[in-house]
Image (cartoon, rainbow, N blue to C red; front, side, top):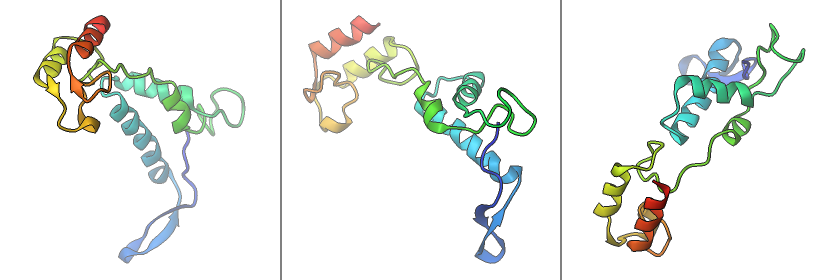
Length: 140
């Protein structure tokens, strides 16, 4: 992989800024992308995150893997486009619709205190009720 690593505006001595180059400048870009992918889908394994980063890379230099660019320059948008869409009924974000999601829904049953923060309101009517339950069970 490659990431911006030459003449990167960075912190310098005595609270100043300067241009720096090297892997110390590029590694934060790659690890930052990995962290963003994990925050979007916490159930991804490290191998899945690596594959998303590699598959989303923009091939540079000689086609395919090469000594200078590796598999290419990271592309966060392309890596995110490869993610599977989230499952709305997966209320706890663990990658599966199951009894834990049902428990979340049942504990939120009734009118939502805030329509914007009511994760169990699947149909958007600002209340958790039978229609939401039917949608969750259908996805189970």
